[in-house]
Image (cartoon, rainbow, N blue to C red; front, side, top):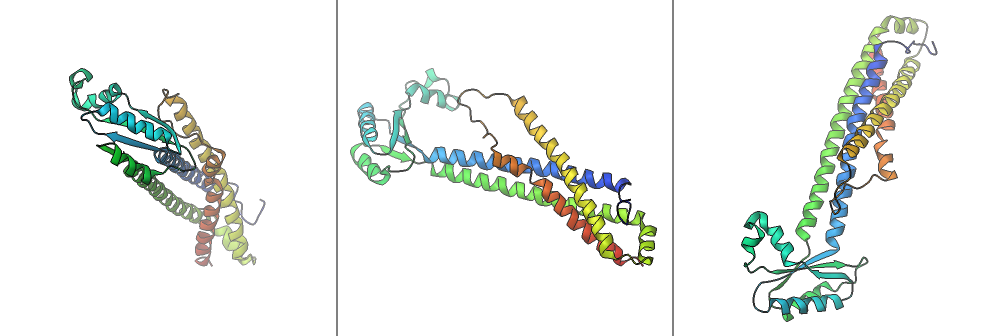
Length: 287
């Protein structure tokens, strides 16, 4: 026995370690979801922010109007690429709603121009839009602002959802640790009473239980994090490589992996704090 209390045996150790493992497993998955959702939202917003879509309404002299717009756009500063979306591609995109491509071949479709911007800004958006609207009838700009706002709200919703899961997991884990600590003390009630008669202070008893809870919390959390990381890696392996051009989830960077390991020290801290509070409350009721 290394201290006043023999804490190396008993079901309480298994319970505390299992609680920490389960809570950290769920917390790690919630953090992983939040990290991927935020990274994906940021990447999509960055891509949309670096692109504009120009629509030229269908009508007379459509080809001439499109060529005039393309010539002016390609000469503008801050433009990396300006290209027209092929009509065949537009018909293929509309086919699920309007029927097969052959059936809509004669429909008067507008022309779409995809504009990619150079990083660092320098694109004279307001001036160029006013100039093109005056020179090219039926032209309109779309900066994807609504999509970027929707993605921002989606990222915030994912963060809120993950935060709620983390809060619920933390509260449930602390309640379980408190119950397990009370059970450990109840099983050693006679031993604690004898120690009190021998002059042992509550602070010494509480320190031993708190330190043991911190060790169990950290070791259990490490198990939970390892299981969660294995599950994430297995899911990525099962998904396999995506087709070219598909939107892939961002690869975890070192900072993300470090964040996923955060439940280990947090679990140790919460287990120690909860055990200290539960021990103090229980010792006050003992003679």
